[in-house]
Length: 224
Image (cartoon, rainbow, N blue to C red; front, side, top):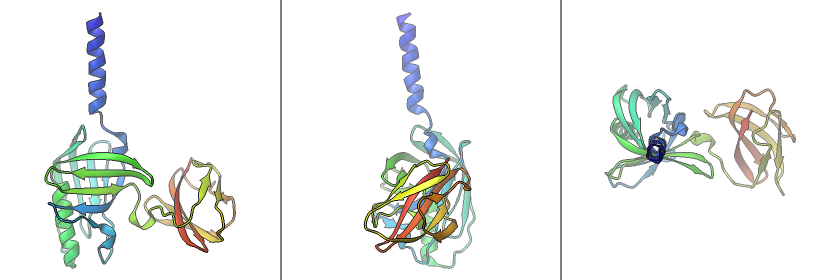
């Protein structure tokens, strides 16, 4: 009897250790790239700007975009590792050398096997993809254009909220605000009033941009 319980105990934790992380299955936005011992570079420094992303579905399929081309594929996802079963991308000339060079790095990396980790950081979830050859990618769960900033301290509550969003800050004058979807689409811009009525928004994750006499600050909130 004790032996059977021990086998079940070991089996349970072995399964747990190799279970897929549900946080993996979402759209990820690329922030940093480092390749073959080269200095890492920020996507935000590429000019003209690009907005690469990667969506990973629960059925292990993926799709996304680089600088001007798109891709799709299927991965074998195990404990902290993703191995491509299939990978396809369009191959148009972006017309800008830095965009073409970036796509060579980006598509070349995600079309090969890599390890991954997901970390909960101060600004949200971060996905790290790495290989033993010192190459890697860093993704965030929100686009570059609306990443959270802390130019001045702001508290928003309740969060999650179903109808009203209250804003608390000191020694700042706020004139207006904008609300963005998680994909970066601006859906509301109007004069600031407190509290802010969000009852008409669909359920999901949003960003609110507040403009004060000290600049702009962006905070994330959840509409339930």
